[in-house]
Length: 159
Image (cartoon, rainbow, N blue to C red; front, side, top):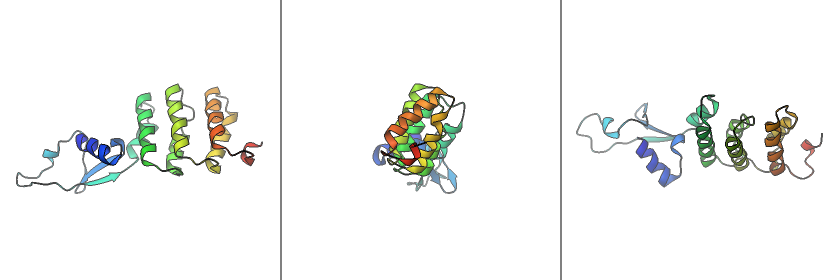
């Protein structure tokens, strides 16, 4: 199944992390072999359904045990399937403004900028609230994001 996901990713640009392969009522596990799904030897083809899902991405981003590399891969997958203005993607990323790892923070900034329109009041407001954080890293990320997201003269920045 993981090889099928790689093929789908190559041809349709849907990251494997965002794919669920469904056969009947079952979501197939990445470690499963397609040949094990065939009920009997008489089957010559297999019809499956591809479901694009952010469940695994969200699980990785929410899990405190996830490695930095896993978080970066999850953020990359998120922006590959979400369009600019996607509030769910924005919210998933906004929860990670406190990341201690430089590489994860950089991926966060790049990802959030890809899924957020310049001047998006909701995101600017959420980021603006972090400028006063006692954590210097959070303040740094917030200022970096605001310099790219805010419009000149934005009333949300005047405080």
